Length: 280
Image (cartoon, rainbow, N blue to C red; front, top):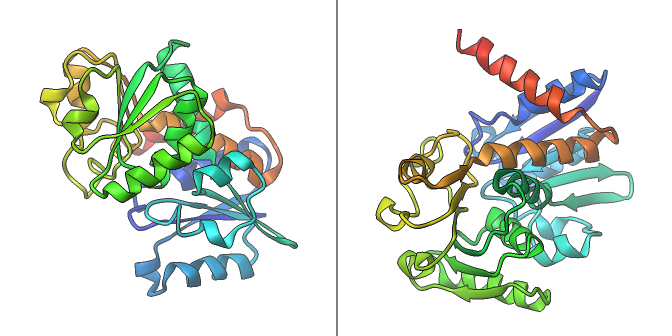
């Protein structure tokens, strides 16, 4: 049996447990996957993490708001992930706890599929937290021309911009003082804030700023159709759901956890079948 889990604050509707259990079934493995909300367990993040490490978990996923918190506890071999400074996937081994960032690889796969190979162009991004860091470095590897970062905490935006510049990316990086400043003249819009998630209403990018953009991506996937993506679709903009990042990061994390590849088409079909069954 492979024991896995997810630590996060707003994960009651997460589809990660289902994805990993179905992936295990497709690979002939018995996989358990536990949702671990620190407040519900009356523990802090460190205590939940240590419990997972000591109780035989093969690995865990980390989501909002702990992707940066966990980083200092991990051995991170990949220099790109060290530059990102956040991890969403942890492998527990005898010689230590190892950190990966499958948000980064999952985002790249999602955008390549959603844009069908077209270049991202100039991108405005709201949110410079854990997922924002992964997305920003993904955009650099996708050869975006320019990234304009807006965060309610300007220090976080400046720190991310500095990290990107230090990585010697050819992508131009700027910090915007308002979301309006970030969006003006951009091709793509990206939401990396929790706004729009179930239980967190609103949108980081108001609808009046959307016309004239070419594409929009929301890292939120619960719900799949966020207010931001519905607004973008209504304005005729190509939309890419956070579900695509969720799916691809999950496939990459599962491979890291168990050392096997799951057939992505079979997994996607199984997830759709489960979703249809639950709506009956």
